[in-house]
Length: 149
Image (cartoon, rainbow, N blue to C red; front, side, top):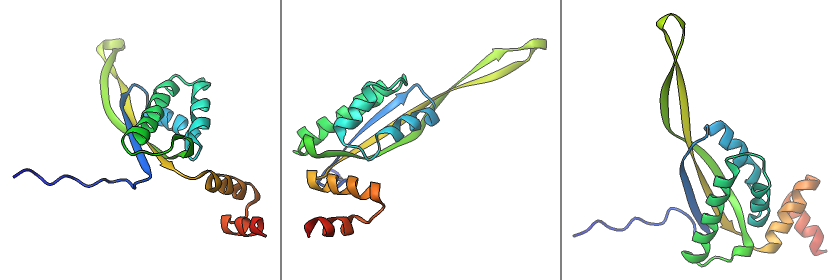
């Protein structure tokens, strides 16, 4: 008489990892998330490794966790993984105060954020075609048809 198991919300070729309670504002975290969206996992990890942002190391851990989930839990090939989605959300806010003149106080908010990273398995040739299609401004299908000739 237990509850029925919840179905998987992601596709079979996807894996996800979430890093919560990161001590950074969501706006700053979104700048780092923008660096890795749509990139291959190796390139994304390299970019995060040499980024000058403090929070980049925590984002790197989250990407590595998503890759480990893809490999161990879902049996995906690590070499074909692409960071499909990286989105940021708000978390709790610590509220502090700073004493000011004349017995007044001003508030200090210390925000926390969370990041969700979804990696997707794409074959090597599909990744190469999309990369070629972006630079020329042609649709991917047209570029693939031209290569086939």
